[in-house]
Amino acid sequence: MFVDKAKIYVKGGDGGDGLVAFRREKYVPEGGPAGGDGGDGGDVIFRVDEGLRTLVDFRYQKHFKAQRGEKGRNKSQHGANADDMVVRVPPGTVVIDDDTQEIIADLTRHGQEVIVAKGGRGGRGNTRFATPNNPAPEIAENGEEGVERWVVLELKVMADVGLVGFPSVGKSTLLSVVSGAKPKIGAYHFTTLTPNLGVVEVGDGRSFVMADLPGLIEGAHEGIGLGHEFLRHVERTRIIVHVVDMAATEGRDPFEDWVKINDELKLYNAKLEERPQIVAANKMDMPGAEEQLAEFKRKLAEIGKEVDIYPISALSRTGVQELLYKVADKLEAIPEMPMVDELVELSERKVYRLEAEEGEDFTIRRENEVFVVDSPSIEKLIKRTNFSTHESVMRFARILRKKGVDQALRERGAKDGQTIRIGDFEFEFVEQE
Image (cartoon, rainbow, N blue to C red; front, top):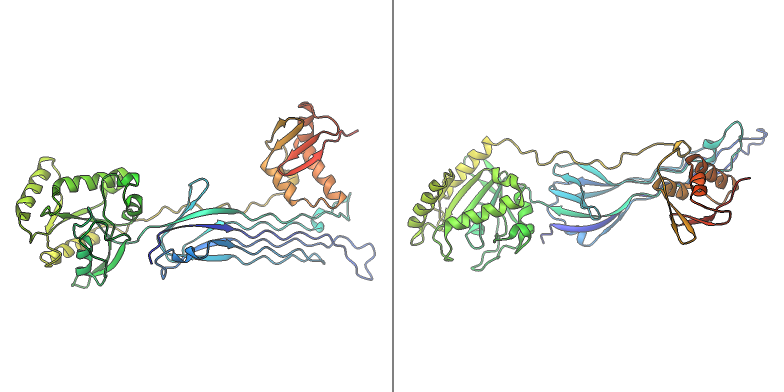
């Protein structure tokens, strides 16, 4: 089964909570704080495995969640960091954020990795909050939540040579006679519904990978027919072998076929116009093929286009060996394509102290009698604050004052006792005396 697209859910592990604890040794009077930090949550990492060829495994498992970090321990011991979750993907996998449609990574090399969901940072224990003014704080942070998202995986076939052309021009037959691949062959359009790969042995010690790609029709760049399901695979190939039915057995004009397919490639991705191309003039053993080939060359000359043309018959294997030699020569002359720019390494872990985040932007709006404060950093602070202790609540209020939220609410008309909402959290506004 060939599966070249999948949508999955990934979530980094939550950080472990920090601990409030104090030293209890018999001979240590007035022992200080001893609560350790929580461990970091595990990352979800995609790693390329050249032994995989499809995304079929993601049909049966669609959720990937890393473990959370351990809670902090007493005696100032750090909770254990969670192990990362490594998910194996085949080479040629493009990872796309489902919400933003941003390409997160383009994975092509064996062993290549990318973090797709960062684990949350562990919360700090009360040893981190000790100050000369408060040597025994009862403050500890909750662990940070791990990143969660839906991602789309698209597999683009990794092949040296891609066979393109209208349906039923003989691409599958050509692949079957030059390699050990056994593609389905039939006398009807779209016999090939998924890419077929074959290793071609040229005969002089050279070899390359050839892909028989599903047939194109007009409008493919807009998704018509197999459209994008086909075109995404062409982007990976180093050389395009354009198979043309030179006997016009379907009643179409071979030159028009060639023009239309090239237009579709160009409209989908302008870079494909620059990709080296060889025309395989197929079905030369059929009546009228010679005349059509002469006409094809004449029309090419009219538009001033120079293209390598190799007359062949995939069925009788006439001219096929010469075509393979030419393809191998061309591949040797082309440097290995950089398949990808090293894309996105997601969200490097930032280490910061929340108390230091002063003056950060926030907005305030009213919904009837409720004042709503919008600020990602304050919402994160709320999630990390343990509101079960008085000291944590006071610290939270102190940080809001430092940021200028209290003053801004006052200027917007907030009065004592009115409701303030930040994210999912609501509290009463209290005027400080």
